[in-house]
Image (cartoon, rainbow, N blue to C red; front, side, top):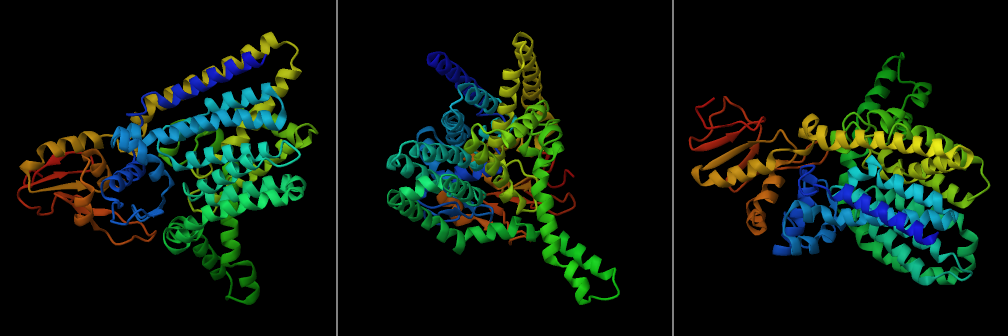
Length: 521
């Protein structure tokens, strides 16, 4: 039996790798955030500085969003070996996404001793639209989640024997610590998941407290640089840009409600104030991640974070999920694993709920793990209860197959046609063309309608970082603290006005990628 189960796991991993590798160099098109991570790695390799001339930073200024630098440094060896291209940019996350699938099998098997449940969970994660989507790009959130799963497995493994295994505990805490270098949201959910694990296993850890201290100190030391950088530079700037308080809506509602009264009296202020308004806004954001429309029907409102005409999960999984949740609530079996998954479920939306962009499939990506587990629990329960397995198993297979085909059609066929703007389709061809004709023009003016076009020009032209660092001109920060490049080399990025008098020997590229020279419009 173990050999058969191992073969099934290998088949699942091969399927997962194929789904994540297929056309990864061209589909979907490279987005500006991916290009920024990769170009900054390229810049470090060429000059020892990022695109803005800072030497080996922990947070990268980039568009003014101060990206955590973990993924940039992960990408360094891949770009060094494979060059500055889309495949090298995405390969680190793809590799870690496969680690996540392998480790979810190990984790659930460790926590439940149930091979069938572990296998079902692994298969569901392998074909999950939510997980596949964020495995096929340079998404730091996906890499951080993989490290979290790996860290959780090694922590639970360290507790298997009477005396805590120092190697596994040290590896676990190190993985948790390094995940904080990858993504802002991880700085909220990873410590809370770590604390949950410590709380669920407190007696064992306390009994071995002398062995726990050194790994904890090591993890704290690893966290010190990113903590210092977060507090002194990019972290606070990033939160002020996307944090829930950046949304003035709750404040305006508070003032409107106060104005409905005769005056701003103390009783009025007690129930119409910013604290209550922003608390209600936070609660709405938090619970929106459990909304059926988000999970099963239409998905994230951000087009880049979903497939068209789909939720983040397959619609049929709502049945299995509800059954699995009910079982986990009342079952005496596998209590610690069930408790961990419930805590994981409650923790996962917290980071996203603290922003004004909720629900967010990207920031709440850790939700995939408890949802997958509880769905698998529901399927496993039905498999055990249904006596006529010759009917039930083919039914489940057919339903998943139909859902899977629908997803593949939505992702690989309709995505680029329905939502091309979400992924900046056409920029690679545009850069290739402008680089070809650049010598014929003094200046090239390009629409800034699309998200951060300059970084795609840098990436696809492999523009020399040392030249860019000297030439770059930035816009002032906007109300969210973000900035963009308005000029380098012959390229100018701005809103194209057909009535404006551009220099005579110029090429102008408008929002529909139409090309014209002064006097043609």
